[in-house]
Image (cartoon, rainbow, N blue to C red; front, side):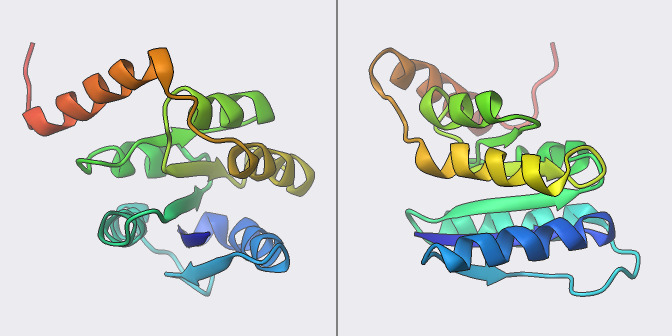
Length: 151
């Protein structure tokens, strides 16, 4: 499996850890930066990862910032991206099985290394269940195609 990974300055340590985990397990990991703790803006890296995932069918993305919130908000602006912010194994498993999440978002200041490993393992080891969830994912995809919507 091919993964694109990116972070902001607050996610550098977890990014390196997750990249190493996935490479040790035989996955290809494309690191889209940054590589220092100098201040950067998370939307820039969310964009790089999401564009890469959309252009490379079958790949997935991993985004890390301090809380994971900013990355998930930015990532979900992309039509075709279903990014899930996960803080535990259960949410990661459900994100894949029920929502077909193609990007996972993590918070370095929220989850420690051991929990992050459990989260990414649960997400990576799960697959979309299909069935009754297919129509829901289709509805999510339809919403993103609507563009700007005011209620």
